[in-house]
Image 1 (cartoon, one colour):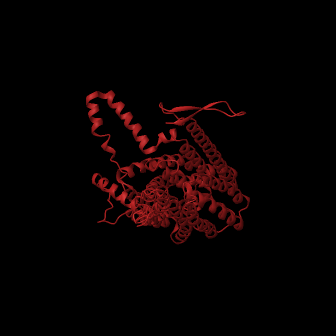
Image 2: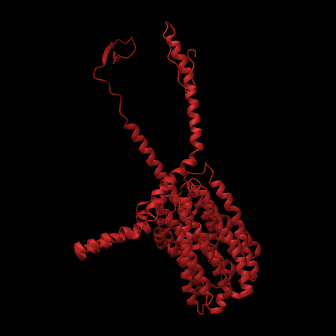
Image 3: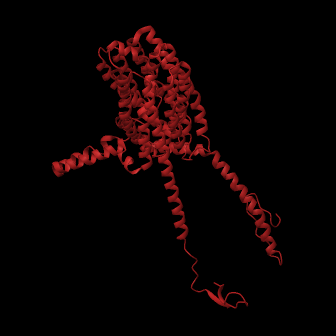
Length: 556
């Protein structure tokens, strides 16, 4: 090996200390060692990038083993059983099951709209009384969030989804035997609670299976709503013509039992997130009551209740996290007029001499637009340049704004052509809203608090979902015109979109200003150069016309 060369391990041989060659040898070694080290660094970076998914899988396997030992309900991912890694593997099966669950739950209000006039005729009720049926179902679907959070924490997502499938199927089957409109209200509570368990538990487990591809997974799962909008109105219209509304409810109840099959494939992944509720509040509380008496017991009960609220309803996030609070208020406001058009567009079209089959076709066209847009949006939002930008909320707010404005088109004319244009624009905006609804929320809270934050926001949404359709029914009964409903929905949706966009713009501006202030303070607080106490100074005389004599450090 000659001087200046580098061996295979990137090490240079010691230079030969000949007279006049010492400096040259050091120069040759340095010039050749730097590119070699750079090449090794680049190769190591490529290897680290290629093995990123493998390292994530190993980490999840290591974390799953102790979790499975302490929680019998979990399944560890070992080499002896089929390993489950985030962002792939069994997660694609869970994604497919979530799509089917959303098709059978979130799109169900469009199915109820087909039977709206039949229910009015059967029970001789007004628009206000009839509108309580889908309103109660939707409100309970969202208000049951804290209860769903408890079940997820206690039993896991798999059991919760299967329980929800049983409840929703049972509720619709019993509704087919209803003799009064009040009985439909009661069965609507049972069905809505089942929808809540299946829908929210599915969304929660999706957040644990997908991390890097979370935006893509959420967007693809939202295509289930579009799939339901395409199929459910046509199925409901066919069943109504063949069996009437009672037979249709019975068949639809049997169809909802398929949610149990979807829940069966949603097995746990990674470290168990379920904690035994009684493990922290049972025996210690009893001992405290025995030792400290009734007063201490009341204090412990109050603390336990506060811990329950924090765990399952995320009231602490509503107070401390301003971004989550703003987002929850904006979404709750949006829901006041977001679902109402889906409930009343079919009665509006039929009231203007359109056949029920053509009105059902409008709902299917809405589903076709939605299922065409959501996969494209999923691929766009999953691009590296889009991930982690924190700008999804502005796209979401813009979609809410457009969705609100589109309702004015529907109110302008009841013709099929105008309603078709309305369905296209409404479907585009609704697709973006459904694609980004949970992705934006996951950017505002930590994933380990997502199920409780979702439960609280869903409970807030249930209030506006409950009063929205009945208020629209009162408006129709008092004016005799369906068009005023869509004008009201337009105002509500437009204002909520403006609120979200303006609020997050202010919050982002404040965050950027705080970051700039912090950087400036860090720069100002950098320590100055401190000279060693044994520094030697020499007085360097200045030249004519220059600065006076200055002391310079010459030796340390």
